[in-house]
Structure formats: C-alpha cells, structure tokens
Amino acid sequence: MHPFLRPPTMAAFTAALLIFTTILTTTTAHNITRILAKHPELSTFNHYLSLTHLASQIDSRTTITVCAVDNAAMEDLLSKHLSINTIKNILSLHVLLDYFGAKKLHQITNGTALAATMYQATGTAPGSSGFVNITDLRGGKVGFGAENNDGALTASYVKSVEEIPYNISVIQISSVLPSAAAEAPTPAPSQQNLTVIMSKHGCKIFAETLSTFHEAFNTFTDAIDGGLSVFCPADDAFKAFLPKFKNLTMSGKIDLLEFHGVPIYNSIPMLKSNNGLMHTLATEGASNYDFTVQNDGEEITLKTKRVTAKIIDTIIDEQPLAIYTISKVLLPQELFKGEAPSPSPSPAPEPAAADAPEPPKKGKKKKKKVAADAPADDSDAPADSPDDDAADDNADDSDGAVRFNGIVGMVLALVFGFLFL
Image 1 (cartoon, rainbow, N blue to C red):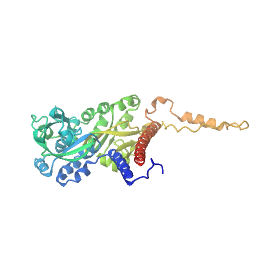
Image 2: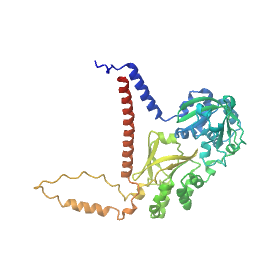
Image 3: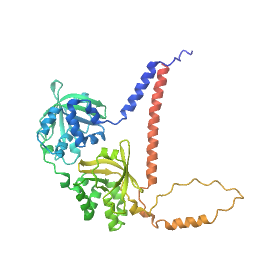
C-alpha cells in the first residue's frame, strides 16, 4: 500500500458526519414553542406566546432574542386582568430584534445597549417605549429595563435557555418588564382604522385607494368582528399596478379591492395548515373570486390563474383580524379572463426535407382565429405573468441547487482530507 494512502477510519467518517450535520442544523428554522416546551417553569410564558400569535412571528424572524420569564412572574402579570391584546404588547417588549447570547451580554460595548423590540416594530409604540435598555453590571450581573421607565433596570439576567448563534437566543430574566405604554388599554381590532394600520407598514397606496371606495372599505370593516384576513400589496407592487387599476370599471375596481380580503381570520399557522381555495370578500353568487393558498416550508404563496404572490410580512395578527403584506397584486380570473397566459414556447421545427409537402393552409386560418380572439391591446396584460413566476421559481431552484452542491462539495472535501491524513 502506498505510504500516503491509509484505510479510512471510523473517526474520519464520524468527524465528517458531525460537520455535515452541523451545516444542515444551521440552516434549519427555529421553533420557539418547542424550545420552551423543554422547560416546564416557562410553560405559562410559552402558552401566551402561542395565544397571542407571537410565536409564529418569532419563528418567522432571525437574529432575535426572547427574554422569557417563569410561571410566577407571568402570574403577577395575569393578576392585572389585562386584555389579550395588551398582554401581546407587553410580551412583544420581551422579544429583542437582535442576538444577545450569554457571552455577548457580558461583552456589551461601553457596558450598555439599547435594543429595539417586536413592540417597536408594530409601529404603535409611542416615542422610545419600544426599546429595552441592557446594561452589564458589576459582579457578572446584567440588568434589563424598558427605556421609557425612567431608565430603571427592573429585571436581571437569570440564565441562557437555548442559543443558536446567530439565529435565536432564548434567555430567562427575573421578571416582566413594566411599561406604562405597553400596558395601556389596546383598542379591539374592530375599533382600529384599517387604512391607518396598513399605511404605517408599507401598504399606504393600497390603503388610500381602498379608503376612496366606500363600498369596498365598508365591506372590509363590517367583516372584522366576524373574522377578517387582509392581504395588502406592498407599495411598489400596487403603484406599478395603478395604470391597469384605473382602466377597470367601477364595479371591477371594487371587486379587485375586495379580492384582497377573506372573511375568515387566518393566522400564519392556519394558512400553513389550511392549504386550498379561499373565497374572498368579492365572492358572490356564481362569481367565484377565489385564490389558492399554498406553502413550501416557511413560504406561503397565494395563487390565482393570473399571478402568484408571496406573504412577505405580518402587519397585525390579533384575532379576529390579521393583515399581511404580499409581494404582488392579486389578479382575479373574473376580471382578467380575456388575457390568457402565454403558452410555453414550442420547440423549433426541424428543417423540412426537400420533397416535404407544404403545411396545410388550415393552420394559417387557425392562427388568424386565435389572433382575433386575443385582447387587442397588450398593455392591459398583467405585469407579472405566470411565466414570470415560473422563471422566478426556476431561478430559486437553481440557486438552491448551487448552495446544496456547495455544501456537499465542502463535506466531501473534508471527508477526503480525513482519509488522506
């Protein structure tokens, strides 16, 4: 045997397998409910993260820190008999939009840091009330306090619960962070202004358009108490669609707007588990006006026969109201049925033999008929066709394949490196 060639050892394969497992683990999404379920002393906190739907919002983010409190601290909070919406505000103040592991907490630059929270991200936190002050104290202690609480550090670091650098850090602090702003009574969803909520979170153009069509706006607001899910196109998407929107009839405009509302409350977990057709506020009689909900892992898509849109953010999720930002304007087939999707290009014909007969003339007549049935003005065609979505999906698949091949290649290189040591 060549002196540089050694038989593979079990240690080499074990090391390679460990590296491969570590690589895959770092790409796996976290689940805050499962993390906290391992710690019974945090069960009440875990329960209210699910009840307020904060758990799904935490799972949808990365580079995040959850400051959990034990059951006794939660009992002190619940004894105040606050509404579920107010409790959600308070708990969202305990979710920091940055990564603070145990090591980082004791190495804070200049000894103190100001961290934005999920409460700040709602856009409803007045002033600096959505920030938490973290200070590295003497003797290895770390203090926490709501920024609008006169700088008082009312809670202290207890322990690290679980860390996935630099994805999520779950730590335990000694008590609930008091905040007059977060504890202020929160109006019920039915009392909130839909257009104001959407305007503050990147859907201003859709919100302003909806407010000008009173029939559609009233349809949305009347549905809230019974349950409503709104899928609001982001400003860039709706702005690009406005020229086509202006060309619709008055009833078509109302139907288009109502097509973005579903008269049922749907949280993110519900959308992930209840795939299939969804009737919208525009559905009436024989007019279906529905779209299909599908998901692939963490990504949720809404599909019509004209376009596929992705849910890109949660604006509000407070039963019975949920509002989500989507990447594209939903185009109902009922309004755009004359604009058939472009067929996939057929393969180019092979060169005909010299003695091949001419193609029958009836093919030309058929072509003229198709042209006559097609819309006269291509400018009305949707900006985002199914072919565009297919191209995007293919590009995503290609990128995923490149990343996967890169990981496999790196692991194989490590394996061979161990073999030839």
